[in-house]
Image (cartoon, rainbow, N blue to C red; front, side, top):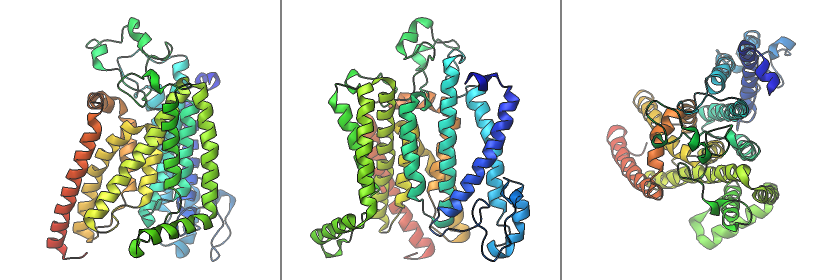
Length: 439
């Protein structure tokens, strides 16, 4: 890390621009090869049968697409514009994110002392985690835009990566701003209050399971069995959620359950997921024994995973019941679980309320102009997550007082579910009046 910090900032930003372009190439490869209908557009893969062989410089990010325009007859006019824009966007965006998160420490509360020493290492860990999450969300969003599905091949490894980073680098999680009550107007946190946080060298806490409240002793690691049970429950709930589970209820519950169990026993992926669950349980138990910040961060990521995915799952169930058709794909559930593993349950709740704002505007335009009510929701979840990361300091400065309500939060969420059901019912009436029924 010292060698990195010794480099001039301009050189670091230039290196990140190159890294962003190559990451954009990987995103394009994933968007085309991990889709339900794979395509041979990415130069990192084989050339299509009807196209001439790929040249070495075709595989270069950004500029390589100018040469690949010769494959227009195979892939369609202008096929190269979007992937080139993806690579250019990451080549520009990654240095900007580094400048924002590390150089200006924009996610850290401005009232705190400027980061130095170990704090800079933590900012780099935070930047790495957010870079990986953005890359995963971008690949998932492109596939969702193309096919209205989000593959487990992106969200499942992404969730595992988020859990690993939380345990290995706890402060890769979002920083938790200091409540304003501790900060004099226009001032800094007094040094005599630094003992309230975890490390004098890093005088801010990371966003944990109980933020903005303090961490209770009963959630610590060994010998407390209750938090270990909570962690394992979240873990196995996620493992069960990604199992193949077709439900055929037309012939009764007993018949449907028998078919489900037979399908699970027949699929190889069932045994792989069970093995992954057993290995993950052993690893979590090891972190629980170690305790400290790694355990706090891992438990936070696990609850974020279960809370984020569970929240969207409930929305999916309610919306499907009201609309009498599948309202959201299960890929949105696994996508939000991945985001929750990186950002925590508090961030997922904020994203849940932010995403519909963009979705509503785009959805109305699409319905009125294109007469199409099928809107992929994953990109809006990702866009809200990106906005939350970039503007985290002011968002948390505003939102921490709401999360301080504690156990009133579930009641507020339940009320929002009821309001959502009412709004969807109103939408059904309007759609019937505008376009006829069914549509």
